[in-house]
Length: 367
Image 1 (cartoon, one colour):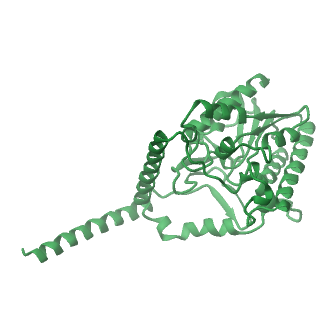
Image 2 (cartoon, helix red, strand yellow; image 1 turned 90 degrees about the horizontal axis):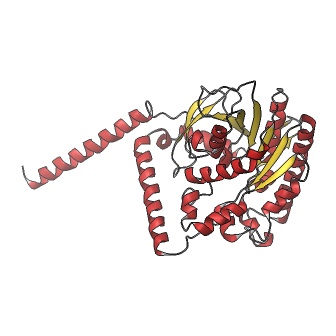
Image 3 (cartoon, one colour; image 1 turned 180 degrees about the horizontal axis):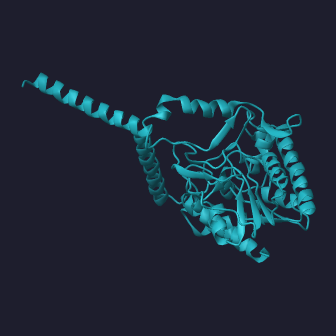
């Protein structure tokens, strides 16, 4: 066999091998690895499907996490979990942080709190990009079904301020929250039709896993050689340490800021009215993104804002900022310890740290 034929033989062999791997990947992607998600996307609204079992990847750099939902369309540990009518209820409201993106349920801070307070039914209403408009709607909806809480926790996120201004609104005609645009619906439904997203899951998962861990390793090596870690600044949280007029004008204006703030104030007032009417206690929780731990909140103090909202007997503010700042002082690797790489969401350890802060705050309030 001459060199040309040998080269063509090897080239053909490599082609057949790669083609075979891709074919196997496509078959596995559409059988064993087929990922049914539990999101019900409508044109101007979305929620979790009821009694669903699925898998969810928040974004490409995140691990896939299993999702189980109950008859209320809320995330639970598994379908064997049943609410006990003899137990009192705790409601948890929040966005993707409360949902626990990238984590199995038992690894999320809600799951850890759930495991700790076994004598309560825990209802996790958290879902990505929800805000106070949605939290209030969810509470009213379940109260109409005569399911009442002993306590509710509102994990008001820094991103809620902008989302309450430009993402969500309450449609008076439909008597329900709606999104201002159908962008989420178009983006998410197009994923289901995308050939690359439907196939090559093995290749993409391996690539994502390797890429994430290599970037994390690089970040750890860089951190070991320096005293500081470069903190990423975000559009959503930068208002806490940057003057409004100096923020990105494509996303922020004085009008947007004031509208979001006033919407939160109005919705929290309604929460307190409902708490008095139905005799439950509110815990309004302030927690930081990594950039607010690093750069502070001297331009708009989120902690003080939440404390001003929660100024009645049935509303208590839990401010975890001081404890996170203390954690930073004692841990050089605090960013990688607490958050997913280059992301604002708590990782497994961060959720555990946060959950213990909440548990310490509320254990004296058990009845």
